[in-house]
Length: 320
Image (cartoon, rainbow, N blue to C red; front, side):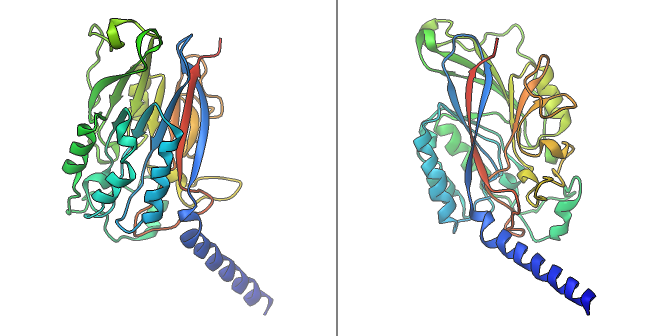
């Protein structure tokens, strides 16, 4: 009788946790904030808004309005690391969500769920260490129209390519050298050739400005990509894909990252490389920010101990 009571109590607690994960936390959006000492000496602070993994459905008005509210943060640069939509008719809602953010300088890469519509599958697959699918869903999402809208707004397409933006003007301008790859989770990443010897971005009016920030962007933070960006001289690397583990253990954290990144770096700001993810920014390392993202697959719409998030990174000069 006692054993049955324990089992019954555990089942009831599990059902309550699942109900909370599906009805409350999955819509409990939060804004994370980090200060990153990564800019050249004398540069003014730069606010970078990092968005990832919206997996947007046309009916998610609450998420759309929350994303629209982020324009009030007045970011200098917006970066999205992919998996924006999860439905064939979601593009109008996405462009409405990003409407005011598209008026600001931005950059983007794509994830697997920008290319292919999600399909039903066993939710337990997510608990595998690297739950990639050999044959992605055959239904294509409207990614050509989405990327065309991003590019028309002036956002930089970093699909296996380099680009640059200049933030600010004159002597206060900051040159941002960008490098990105297509989705490593689909093995579509091809790291672009070096630009050594090529002209660097020049501030408005031909002035040198306050120096250069080197920024790497990827959807899935596979180690090979992080290593390539670090070796390329990236000061800061932005990625998503992991959902922060999505189903986490309170007091412990993520059980999986859905790639070969260690679970201690499933979300948040860390150093790369290095054995200690809690000691970022040291000599010889790049800063790495992994976003837990704002959504889930529509076939696994739950989050536990891992709230959906966007992040405002305030970049400041390096500590002397």
